[in-house]
Length: 290
Image (tube, rainbow, N blue to C red):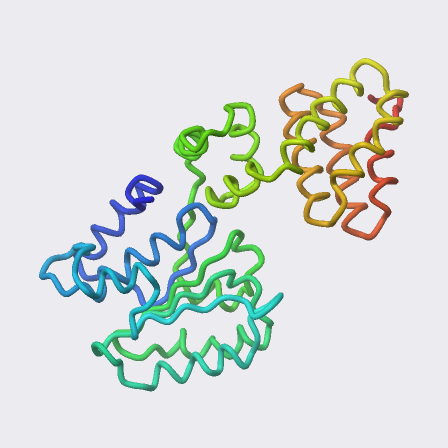
């Protein structure tokens, strides 16, 4: 997918920055909708072998960068559940080394919010005292998860979700409009949305969610009995989070404010290790305010 289609406004803004040669050395891209694609596009602009301001996308450097195989482009992502201090320390050595292909270096750190605090602190010096012609792009879904010391030393760029474009791409991939609408709210990643839609558990689970909400409106007692059908499909942590997110979206569609509030509360309970079944019971439970 072309970044100009995903985030046209940001491409326009960065085109002006590139034209004026005012690209900063450290950015934090917040919001997952196209942040990696824009970081790659900017890397291509930095290393492009064709004279001009914007990347040609055809030269050797542009093609290798698109594959993540260019020697002076360094990509980093979590090792397991986090980005470890040793990873960052190894990366900081890159700044003191000469480039292989040019005198420039670009580092892209994906899921930067998963940096161990010690790792983030190890990165600070490289951000505060950057080597000439070195650029760092930190990518995150949510800048609130980034240490304030990192935030204050980077330019934060927010990536809005382009819902109409997102939905149209999903529908072009054969996803039903009703599913596409919900998937747009569940994730910022088109690839993740397509993969989820193609799984049997999601289609089955979504149908069960529709049935569950229908029963909630008509007969709460039957909704209680139906909970076992939900727990059967949403049988691990990742899927259970999807269920809570789906229910919130379906209650929004119904304009059912009290159930939205109860689902948020149930999600918090679940995150604090209250049993999944008990959290679902809490959502169904009637009260005078419902």
